[in-house]
Length: 522
Image (cartoon, rainbow, N blue to C red; front, side, top):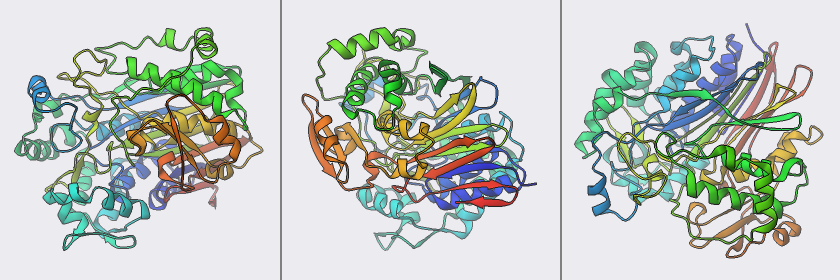
């Protein structure tokens, strides 16, 4: 029985898998999971079974759940040895590989009320890996950007290169080993990734490369399910993941600016100033809260934030921020029963650690790059500790009911991107497609491909943007329109009684579908 629902992702094949889940009687949870699985096949440069995820799952009840699918460093990690060899966490190889939490995150999301079994939900991903998927524009770009690194790994070289040349857009990418792994998980259960045959293959492959991760680390992994972090602003409530996610950064901006942050034609300069305050707090506090608690009550105090915004001049400083290019995908779903999912999954940098385990087809992330080698840092590297994370799903409630589901790729810039989109998303007179296509900007440095602190503005932005987006210590550079530097976002919102609208960012290869009683709009 087909259900009413919406699904949007950065790849059309993944969106179709989510839409088919609705047609088969699934709900928003089923649609999100089916789509997320296909993305690990079709967008392997941005997410993989060997990655992490964060999600927020909401329903009609004002009690959304945050799913923390991030993994910890190995129990036996040699912190002093790593500090003696590196000045910062390396961006490739076995050292930055923490326990991959994505598969456990899928299981936790499924337990929130999915209707379809895993054998059905993973079938489109298995088929895509077996039969192949056309290489997308984004994947081709990713292969070129990290070509030298990828060629050094036998698994990646065999999968993505022909005679030393990377696959090109339109070529067929087949991943038979990954298909076997996905089928194994569908039949044996997802826990096999942590305690079964797949876990053994993954830990053996990592050990052969010198990783301290062992079977005990995989077996002891636990997904955290907690209440979502929430900020109320009038009749609206914003729900995201708590630390070790950076979700509080966006909530700080909203608390500081109040309803002025939610205007469709908001002041980009004021948003930038509030973001720079919140980003300073992220660098000062964000890490694993079990080892370094984040003072959220104080950070989200509107009066204190507004005082800081009025009185404190902004300055920039070079942050110990590793680059994160094309690291993430967002999946958003919302159904007619008011169940919504914002799911963000990632390998951190393009192709993560640059390691593909050949027997399983699994690419390992490099989320350990979120650790600092400074012993006094809140995200200091330590055994059994989760790294600071950029992933931040977002749900918006209006009058207690889910009103919008949002998520974006963009590394450390995710709160910046969502802050710019919120005004248009909440203005029901503006089509979502118009909001997502509108010119954007992000502030950063190495994380957005600039050596110095820079505000990157898409070149089709109005001149008033450039005038407003000024901050001491920041250069300003125009970039191409519809650039992945400013992220690709996915959004669904309620437009009226039992009506849904969905849109996929044109900066991706995505699509959005709304299905109702067998009728679909795209």
